[in-house]
Image 1 (tube, rainbow, N blue to C red):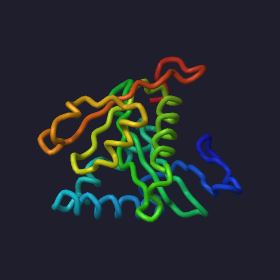
Image 2 (image 1 turned 90 degrees about the horizontal axis):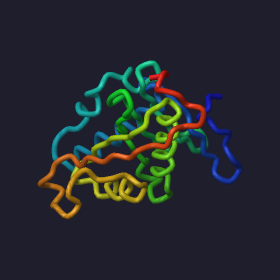
Image 3 (image 1 turned 90 degrees about the vertical axis):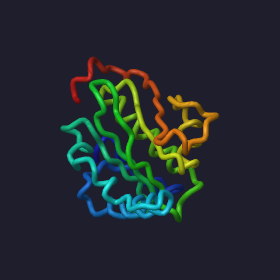
Length: 178
């Protein structure tokens, strides 16, 4: 069991696991994200989801991909990749459509932040699309600073950038594990 895996509790039956993009449990995440983005933006988004090499979301390359499992099935997930020496970039935050409004995305974001901090990252950067008000709300309510005018029409901005500074992990020196 890795440091991220947690034994399922009797109450929640939730476990967080770190996987690679090739893990078959990741397929529902990428498929549903691609379908949803394609619907919201009116163009095929599946190619965009494949834009980054899979290895960018693995530990040796400074990234991670986490899945939140309920009864062994993926219900939420997300990833980060190395943006620069001290910054991780969140990508692919997803909650299965049948499991939304349960706080699972908040849990995934918190787990990603924890893992990024443990690896020596001091800042998180991300962008979300202008037609994703749920994501915008998630980042605003979880302490992310918008790097755009929140009063402007999101459609006039394009991708909406956010950042959050992370506390130093206990007993962490310089980001040597990146």
